[in-house]
Length: 154
Image 1: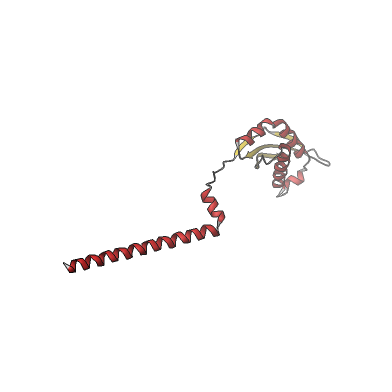
Image 2: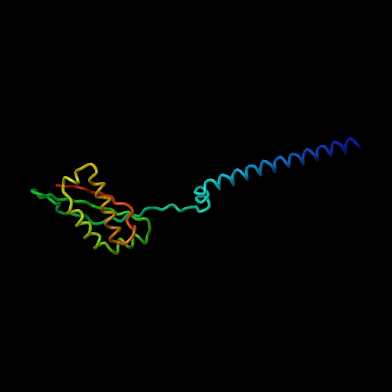
């Protein structure tokens, strides 16, 4: 009987040691995770504040046909512009101000020469200018992107 008690005590000691080792490992992992989060607050914020995926809304404007600024030739541009925005409120602002937007775009497009627009960076520069002009007109960062779905000069 004494042997059985000794074996039982040894098993209990082994179980106790195993539990202590497992708790130690868990504590080390928890400390490492805490250290990682404290060293990388941006990562921790992203996990804690799960950001929603924002889907861009696109508003297609009617076709534009404008005369381009020219020195000796008559040139014109025919284009369709699509404006990208990040919220339904921004889309409503664009739709409610479509006349002002079209007027501003006509003025911007008419100020360009055919040579400017034929340059490799010509249309990219025009997109940036349109975006900046419209955001200033609308009083905030409403337009997130500008797309040309049709672009023809003659």
